[in-house]
Length: 395
Image 1: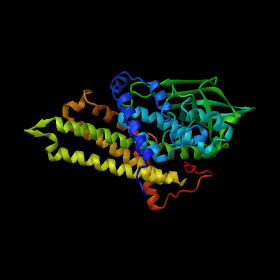
Image 2: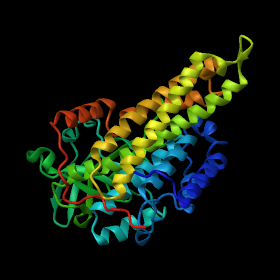
Image 3: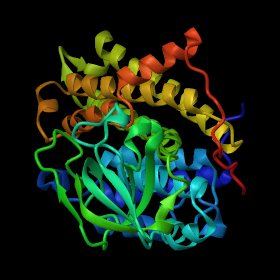
Image 4: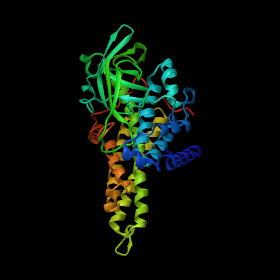
């Protein structure tokens, strides 16, 4: 596989890095401290064409490939996890799922404005009692004439108070277990819909996360995505995209930890020399570099498969698991390198450590991915082609 970047990708990285340096870095400490999600930053990302990076131009996107999306996520998370999360949810979980599963009329109505950044999309799968165990969800959808009536609740939903459109998963037939789950395109304006932000989070405080409530909410029949019972397959295909963006973002987290630590190693002296001269500090720096390079290779390999329209569940799972673990370790080491200063918000590494924990949990815990990888090796798990595969990128 050739992972050389095209001239377009090199320019893309420079543009996103410049955006992060000027539009996020100077303000993120204040936003994080106040728990403020800056929606104007999303609008600026849209103006740069970054809310539909790998969506074809025919549907309002930038028409780039999936490794270009990885570059965007990596550079955004170098600034802060909150904005990479926004792109992950909007593009990875929602828009890329619409590209794969939606009808042409659904694409025109929902995908096009999302790819342009005119509307924001989100993803509603997790519930208070249903995380890794998707089949345990309690939200129901009952067909009543020309509408489905939804009742239930979702939790830990990114962009809960910001998004215009949501992909919501609910049971249309509980007797069929996960084969009875369906997916719906939900608009915020529907009667019976409400949302509430979650406060007191350990990390990603500059992001918007919370709960969705459906109280007899009517969803037009034509907003069913796929067919009844396709919800589980749709959710799993969406996670292949979402996990890819999370893994790419983790590379940015490692990069941020490495940059901050290298700077501090040259600034701080102990025992008459820069702390970077101490071997145990060098060991931590070396681990960060190794983690960054290995994670990038796993991410770009998964991206290469996506570009070909090939199934990539196994590869994306491995990339997400390892990159997020490497990022969590890099953040822990960055705090250690900074010593007591790393324990305060005078330096950004304490925020990196707080932010690094959530990606180890969401979109498949490390334990889920550990089991998946073991089952692949042991032959207990084999990927079967989905009814619809992720479309190959068309330049």
